[in-house]
Length: 373
Image (cartoon, rainbow, N blue to C red; front, side, top):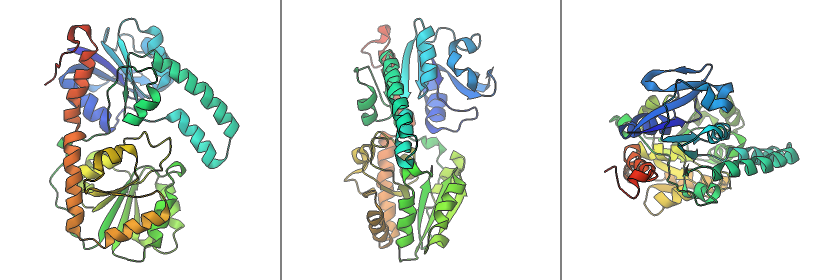
């Protein structure tokens, strides 16, 4: 079996969906894989995986000497350019790939514009960062973006590539009855911050006249979410804020809802996204409210599964009112349609096969052969 050292930029005890389902589970059927998490000290952990001291990431190869696999066939680095730089500098014969899931350097510039702080400094930082990052990507053997739009942005030199879309591990699902409450139950999972312009969602629900609904929010940004709720004048009592749940518990909980909310701004930062919550909502058979980011349009337009809205308060209000006029059976049909698409096209077990074939195709002895059936 070919050997992979994978650095996912995740802490020890990670619960990250693609890291654990794809690299720590399904791809291990086709490769010998060592995942390197970050933590307080460098050490070996269960399943042959490793932890590297976070402050030693810049010296990745040297720090893991004696612990990591000898002469791996592939290094794959997720989002961390410090680690990529060290591996490219010290690597002799392994193929090096970069997995990009978010434009972190660009994010700081966007945030500066929103907050109107440090604009010049952030712009200069971004100019230098983007040039350095482009040079490092040019030295990679292959790229693994999370979407077609991300590939358009980072793959300027037409490197070999495949995608790691945000997908789902269907082995984590259990059969649970759907919500039979008469009220329509909305669900928001994820980050609460200014960049996502979450205020528009709270403002929209505050304008709804009907009282036949509940919105539950699960987030690690508990205080921020409660701050937005506290600014509501009319409907704050219909909104509940909860701390984030571990993934297995979350999936059991999600079945009890009718509509998932996956609303993110349409801008250069988010049009490259492959949102995990969009996939998770459908995997749990919820209908979904989403903005028309390319990933959502490609998969779910004209499939009677999603409500597409403009990312402004009036449009969101209009869609909520429309949903509240629908029968639950109609929403369940939409959720089932979305589920069928995710099961076929955003399934980690299936995706592991095409990713494996891509990686083997980069090796001379397997060139142009479809190894994984």
